[in-house]
Length: 378
Image 1 (cartoon, rainbow, N blue to C red):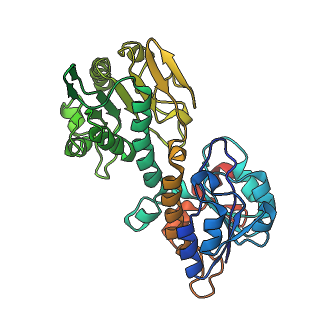
Image 2: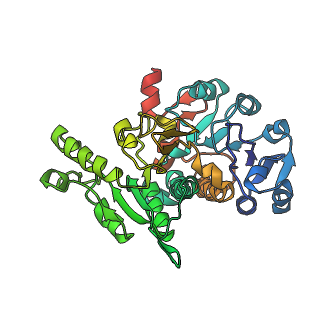
Image 3: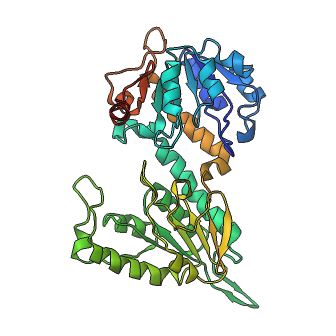
């Protein structure tokens, strides 16, 4: 099939959906690649590298003409949708819960749209797990941004003039991003602590050399389902945990929050009172800024000061590591591609009986097929 890759149009987006390495591999699988002029420049992949790998470099309209499948990082632009033939496929981080007419656009254009963030998180799909690949980089970059904003050194330093104390870093949420943030802060020499609502996270946090912070009563010990998800906690427990966290935050130099729930506003983890109790010069990095923030004071893509503390609301940290983020994302797409092509003819033909395709598909030739959105559209 003819695979197209166009430039990203979202504000501040520097990633690209293919790399010279994945282009070579896709061509080796029997496909042809057409990439828009300049699509990879911001990710440090110039056109010459794509051309050397075997891709056709052309204008936006030429790339889309006759394309069977369009690969994107973020939502397609209206021009992307208009340039594709009916029945063609589109794979991207489609942000289906974000307001807008994206789903309507896919329907109107008669496209088969697959959302990478909906790929089931099963063992067989680990190589396609874009949420993990990008969250890993977000957790790392959060610490780098914190170190840049923080006006002091991270590690303890012993000099002839005296000793500099190590920075204290508190990570709220021990998922993929949180664990990477813990590991990175530890590498930089910080004293790290972390919290999470799942009891199993205590062992993960400890394995990285960080201290686990939580009210570990009987309710907490039973706060996880057999599937590994957190159970709702009582109001009494939440009150005790909030008091413990507030006391702990007041002693920290860096706080990194990572709690995100797809399709819902981000839960509040750090209140205004907690921020105002933070030490002068301390930093809060809010990884949930795109969904309202884990702190109500967070402003998307802004760094603000509140009572001597800085709050950073970066909404797209992976884009600040464009080359690596693009490389990992392109490999996620490469792993998915065999499920979208006929084994013999190589034509665009999604394996509709496969649970991965079923889970990721929003539309099929313009018809809404995802259970959540099909009900909403009915």
